[in-house]
Structures are given as C-alpha cells and as structure tokens.
Length: 108
Ligand code: FES
Image 1 (tube, rainbow, N blue to C red):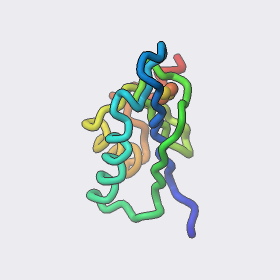
Image 2 (cartoon, rainbow, N blue to C red):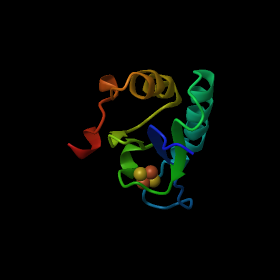
Image 3 (cartoon, rainbow, N blue to C red):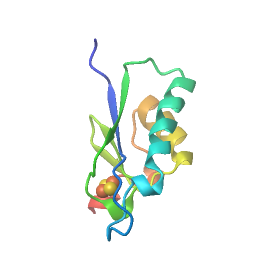
Image 4 (tube, helix red, strand yellow):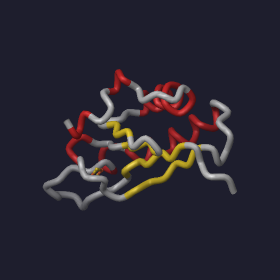
C-alpha cells in the first residue's frame, strides 16, 4: 500500500450533555468527516492517495469543528460542509492551503 499524499484529520470528539467545554462532535463534525469522504470520491481522488480519519479532541474546541491537513499540518477552524469542496479543490488537489478559510489562525 503506497503512503497517502494527504491525511485529513477531523476532530469528532463529543462530550456529555452539560459539559462546560464545547465539542466538534456537537458542532456536526461526523457529517463533516462523511462530507470529506464523499467529496473526495465525487472529485475522483484516487482511493489511498488521501486518508480521512476521525480523531479525539485536537485542542482548540471553541474554534471547532477542527480539521488538520497533513503533511503540511494546516489547521482549519469552524469548518462547515460548504468548506469541504473548497479544501478538496484548493488544498488537496491544488496543493495550497485555502487562504480565505484563514488557516492556522487558531494558533495566532
Ligand atoms: S473537541 Fe474538537 S478540538 Fe476539542
């Protein structure tokens, strides 16, 4: 099996009702993960070239849903399903982080 060119990590962490911290899971990240898988398939990305994984908490919960794209470790915050096609087009297929989504702003 060849090494994937990109790895998209989607935080799918959920917390119990009443927990004081927000979570990406409660912000719809499970649907987001599926949207990445469907979007990659619809755009004809070769299976195995891009790996999509769910993850537990990645840290910036208040800015979720959080998505990180490797190997360049680009962090996207407050990702919506509408952003998925843009990330696939510009980052995964175009090779450049999506400037209009303000990548890595969570760390600035
Ligand atoms: S719950 Fe997603 S970053 Fe913490």
